[in-house]
Image (cartoon, rainbow, N blue to C red; front, side, top):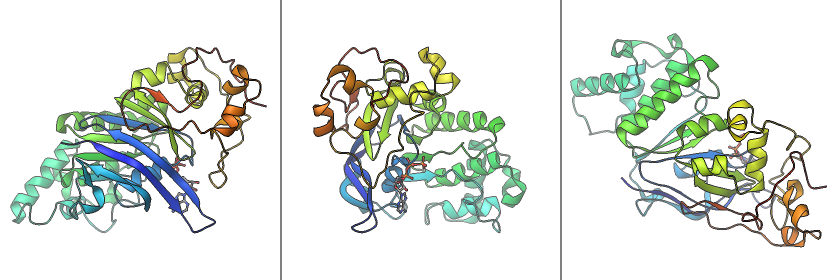
Length: 327
Ligand SMILES: Nc1ncnc2c1ncn2[C@@H]1O[C@H](COP(=O)(O)OP(=O)(O)OP(=O)(O)O)[C@@H](O)[C@H]1O
């Protein structure tokens, strides 16, 4: 088992008028651990995750697994991804058994009986009755489809699982069961996981490490409990303050005012200096001129586990009034 390392990874879409969706990101998913990736829509979470499995174009930097560039890994790489939409991820004409069989790497299990046994094992692993192997996905609920998608991902016996909003398209009533399943499978198999979610309560439940993304950058990373209870970056604080109930009650806050008036971030035109400065309440509180925040980019390499934040003032003990935005 090995660490998954994003080493100064950039992803650019489009030509000269395109955008840099991921900008020199450094992040480590330590072997056997879950890194929760949060950040608002458009911050580049999916793009970063997809870069690891070759689905978004790496324009600079490298993604390494055990020190090997993932672009040089074998055709069925030891990284597998599960996506948000369980309805489009399965071929409606194939039985779920066939779908899973197809995902078993060629040559690994020669013989139909061995493959059938493996399908039964995988279905049991995701808490589905192996007798359902002959069913078409049309007969399955969203939650059951997501279990099949997970079984497919596990068929390649991966080291790393990348999960992109895997419960957000599901009925609320089954989200918890799917999350429990993912967590127990991750622990049982000792998988490393990069887990993307908008939902901070979900992130908190699953993650050992939390990384926060804003406008293509990791702005804060650290042990989950620390980041979620003692956030160092103003963006993380705003994100936590804006979150409904579970996490905000955890923090003793509960407002969505903090980011309510904020301009949406535009990845086509990221601001100079600190990318968060147009929305940040901190700079004006500590410096009247804000020059540092306007001129100097505090981005730092976050490819390590200690708690770090790309903010000039992250070490300051600040009491930030809720809803205090930069004017
Ligand atoms: N294939 C693509 N071509 C061009 N631009 C893209 C492409 N995919 C994503 N983008 C842009 O890249 C930026 C980052 O998108 P991305 O989907 O990675 O963000 P995200 O944080 O995962 O958002 P969400 O939570 O909404 O999925 C956005 O501005 C998006 O419009």
